[in-house]
Length: 88
Image 1: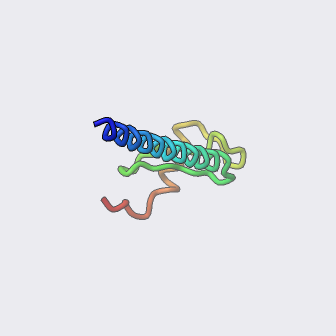
Image 2 (image 1 turned 45 degrees about the horizontal axis):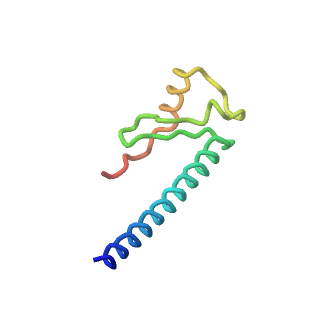
Image 3 (image 1 turned 90 degrees about the vertical axis):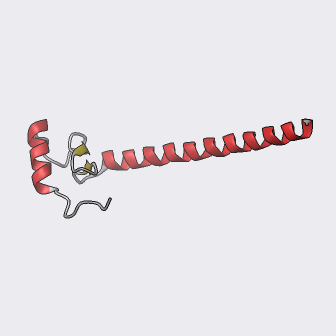
Protein backbone atom coordinates (compact mmCIF):
# COMPACT_ATOMS: atom_id res chain seq x y z
CA UNK A 1 0.00 0.00 0.00
CA UNK A 2 2.76 2.46 0.88
CA UNK A 3 4.52 1.77 -2.43
CA UNK A 4 1.32 2.50 -4.34
CA UNK A 5 0.84 5.78 -2.46
CA UNK A 6 4.45 6.75 -3.19
CA UNK A 7 4.02 5.96 -6.91
CA UNK A 8 0.79 7.96 -7.03
CA UNK A 9 2.46 10.92 -5.32
CA UNK A 10 5.35 10.74 -7.78
CA UNK A 11 2.95 10.68 -10.76
CA UNK A 12 0.98 13.60 -9.34
CA UNK A 13 4.16 15.59 -8.75
CA UNK A 14 5.31 14.96 -12.33
CA UNK A 15 1.86 15.83 -13.72
CA UNK A 16 1.70 19.07 -11.75
CA UNK A 17 5.25 20.00 -12.77
CA UNK A 18 4.42 19.33 -16.44
CA UNK A 19 1.24 21.43 -16.24
CA UNK A 20 3.14 24.31 -14.61
CA UNK A 21 5.76 24.15 -17.36
CA UNK A 22 3.08 24.23 -20.09
CA UNK A 23 1.28 27.12 -18.37
CA UNK A 24 4.52 29.10 -18.12
CA UNK A 25 5.24 28.49 -21.81
CA UNK A 26 1.72 29.64 -22.74
CA UNK A 27 2.06 32.82 -20.67
CA UNK A 28 5.44 33.57 -22.25
CA UNK A 29 3.98 33.02 -25.73
CA UNK A 30 1.02 35.29 -24.97
CA UNK A 31 3.34 38.02 -23.68
CA UNK A 32 5.53 37.73 -26.78
CA UNK A 33 2.47 37.99 -29.05
CA UNK A 34 1.12 40.97 -27.06
CA UNK A 35 4.49 42.73 -27.27
CA UNK A 36 4.71 42.20 -31.05
CA UNK A 37 1.09 43.32 -31.51
CA UNK A 38 1.58 46.49 -29.46
CA UNK A 39 4.92 47.35 -31.09
CA UNK A 40 3.80 46.78 -34.68
CA UNK A 41 4.36 49.67 -37.08
CA UNK A 42 1.23 48.55 -38.93
CA UNK A 43 -2.29 49.12 -37.69
CA UNK A 44 -3.59 45.72 -36.58
CA UNK A 45 -7.00 44.47 -35.53
CA UNK A 46 -8.12 41.31 -33.77
CA UNK A 47 -11.47 39.91 -34.86
CA UNK A 48 -13.71 37.48 -33.01
CA UNK A 49 -15.20 34.54 -34.89
CA UNK A 50 -18.45 36.47 -35.33
CA UNK A 51 -16.66 39.42 -36.97
CA UNK A 52 -16.55 41.81 -34.01
CA UNK A 53 -13.35 43.79 -33.43
CA UNK A 54 -11.88 42.73 -30.09
CA UNK A 55 -8.65 44.74 -30.17
CA UNK A 56 -6.57 47.14 -32.22
CA UNK A 57 -3.04 48.46 -32.15
CA UNK A 58 -4.06 51.91 -33.35
CA UNK A 59 -4.06 53.62 -29.96
CA UNK A 60 -0.56 52.41 -29.18
CA UNK A 61 0.93 52.95 -32.60
CA UNK A 62 2.50 56.30 -33.47
CA UNK A 63 2.69 55.44 -37.19
CA UNK A 64 -1.06 55.21 -37.70
CA UNK A 65 -3.63 57.99 -37.50
CA UNK A 66 -5.30 58.04 -34.08
CA UNK A 67 -9.00 58.65 -34.73
CA UNK A 68 -11.49 58.70 -31.88
CA UNK A 69 -12.84 55.29 -30.89
CA UNK A 70 -16.07 55.38 -32.93
CA UNK A 71 -14.25 56.59 -36.03
CA UNK A 72 -11.49 54.02 -35.50
CA UNK A 73 -14.02 51.20 -35.37
CA UNK A 74 -15.81 52.51 -38.49
CA UNK A 75 -12.53 52.72 -40.41
CA UNK A 76 -11.44 49.25 -39.34
CA UNK A 77 -14.75 47.69 -40.27
CA UNK A 78 -14.61 49.35 -43.68
CA UNK A 79 -10.96 48.65 -44.45
CA UNK A 80 -10.26 45.34 -42.76
CA UNK A 81 -13.24 43.12 -43.45
CA UNK A 82 -12.25 39.46 -43.50
CA UNK A 83 -12.40 38.11 -47.05
CA UNK A 84 -14.12 35.00 -45.75
CA UNK A 85 -15.58 33.80 -42.50
CA UNK A 86 -13.47 31.25 -40.63
CA UNK A 87 -14.72 27.71 -41.02
CA UNK A 88 -16.62 26.47 -38.01
